Length: 131
Image 1: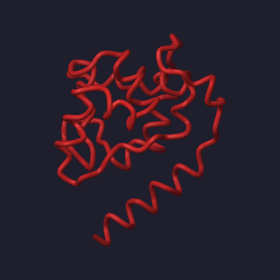
Image 2: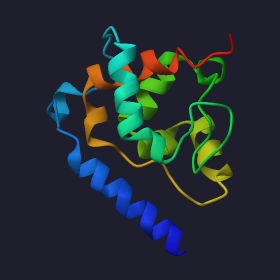
Image 3: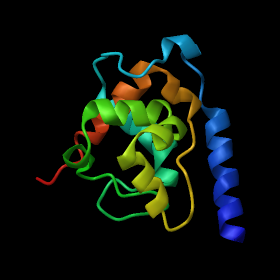
């Protein structure tokens, strides 16, 4: 239990360090924006790495290598924009949530309200493939 508290504290500090780059109305899922994989990798290393690995191994969340073989870009964009809503409305998201052995839910990340930030992370995730 103590480790979960420490992890939560670190995650919250990381979230506070992120600048908000868009207003809520600018961040609607489904906007088509070209992504920058390098910027997405930087965001991944700042935020996502606390719960996800960029290989096939699970951490607190699933390993993300090959994620684009498991979900499509539109689904991932909606998930990043509002995980809680996706869990309510999407069967795959609900199953992912229910299968998490730690009982954790991906939090809403303020920076992911920005369509460009989501596109950048998705562009990076597209690079996580077997060679």
